[in-house]
Image 1 (cartoon, rainbow, N blue to C red):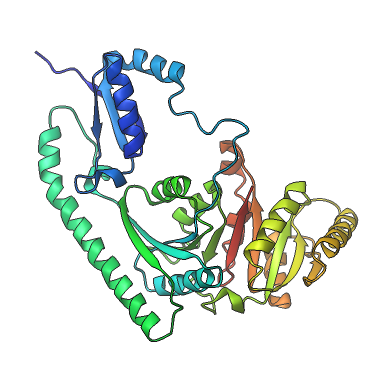
Image 2: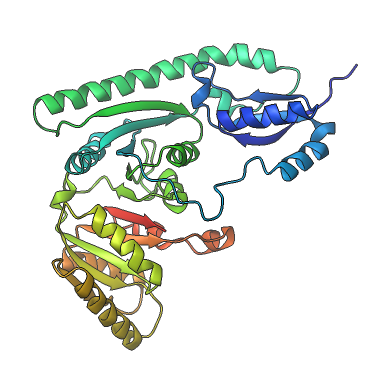
Length: 371
């Protein structure tokens, strides 16, 4: 008798996949989990919930009716951040620079650090077909274990190097831990931050396997677009290893009311650094109207932050990239802050966000705030 075809109903974290599997089985639908990390199941990402093809219509109806994966109830307060800074690492040459910036930031705010490395396991990258599941698992469990052991050695070496730097007083004494997870890096990072909300994510713009033409890392871009916590993106060419050395911070504004709320969040995040700020426009309005709005914003900030050094600036007309590059150079900007807002798929696809465009300005750290 021919074995019935299996289909993937959903892809979730291990915990959610287990919940969905139990729900289906209570309704009489046989379900199985695939892509589960055999060494540490609980950290699995991209776990597939598979069912018989003939059960698909009923399973979809059950999911819709039960609202099993419903997010936080409307009106419920957002989860408060945990007391830590998340640093995704790829063990590239400038990983240590990222760690230095993250550790120094954490030390001034009394936070701890979590180092995270996400690797692609055979279970995540290889498709599963019905009939050869047992062979797949036997053949790839050895590869998975080897890959896990390899990245574990790299993480242990990084932690050893960091401890030695702390001993030599080249790094502040900050409590830190590490986590190794498998899956698509951007998905795992975002999922982890949803469960354990950090104060800040500190990461690089390009990965270890970058190409010279790849000025923006796809992982950083996805985290920027979808994260709900501030993300500090560090290019390789950054000239310092402590944000306290970023004395001049440029803040982009599109004159949206949400900018005022996010500006306040930024001020609290950077209050220990006490830099000077320059607010500049990224709106498409007329120069005259932009001047009026900037003047009003300057007056607002002078009233609410009387001790802060806050100026306003107008970018030159014409090509935005050239105007921004000139502004950064002439004003000796050490870091850019930009706000990003939720946008639908088509807007993000056809009109890349301002945060992504700014990443092309190598050497200038970028702090992305989120509403």
